[in-house]
Image 1 (spheres, rainbow, N blue to C red):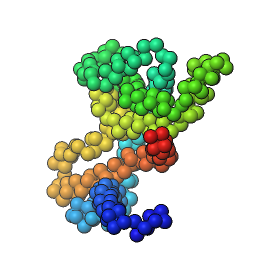
Image 2 (image 1 turned 90 degrees about the vertical axis):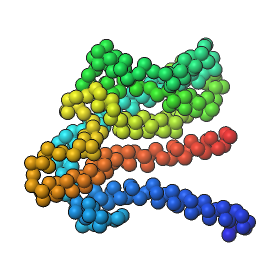
Image 3 (image 1 turned 90 degrees about the horizontal axis):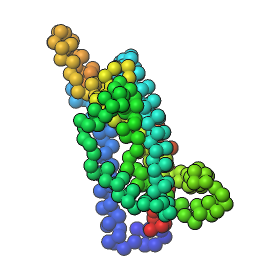
Image 4 (image 1 turned 30 degrees about the vertical axis):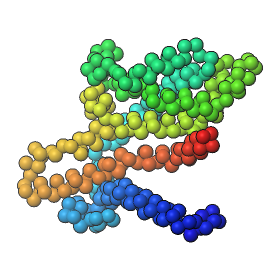
Length: 299
């Protein structure tokens, strides 16, 4: 076996084969449930519940997706989640950049003390009840999308990642030169630091977007009006509620068919809720690769 034009030793060849086999097994373990859910969403309910479907769709049908999009609550929740994700991610990025840039500068007075105080909040918080009282009583944000956005306006972990990137990838001498030329601190951030920090901004933005899209607990606490609830709450209802009262009112055969249909609709809702992240990720993937290469070159 050859590698990069050179003959590999028997040990290296064995290690490479073992790595390929091991990673292939891991890939199969990860991909199988994803493919199964996708296939089940396009399969007939009877085929799925009877165990006829193992991997590929059986008795392909679009009825499951038709049922999903006929549900006005799911369509409304999808719209609400997109609005919350876009607005929340925009605020998160602004707050994170405005916090990370000052902390990355060597000339910030008391920077080490501030960094310790900020890091302290990663390990200790007020708790659920004080947070609930703050949001609902003090701020009056019950049934308001701001209750899902403002409490998590900045993540200390993401801020530290961005600060580290600013320190390691944006030369401080370049900032000093711009300052000597009369550029303000805010001008340095906009004209020098951010243009050189596209990869970290994109990656952190993806972290925030995924967090907003998957979050349901805050909405469960602060949003009672169905018209304002995000998709994740409707997904939670679909996955956890059995609609036992409705099933009890039906005949045995009808109840069995309804239960099978509900099972396959779950898969369709999961697929629909995953679409935005599947669309966003390919556009951000190249920044992950670039970030890895930067770390490798700088050592």
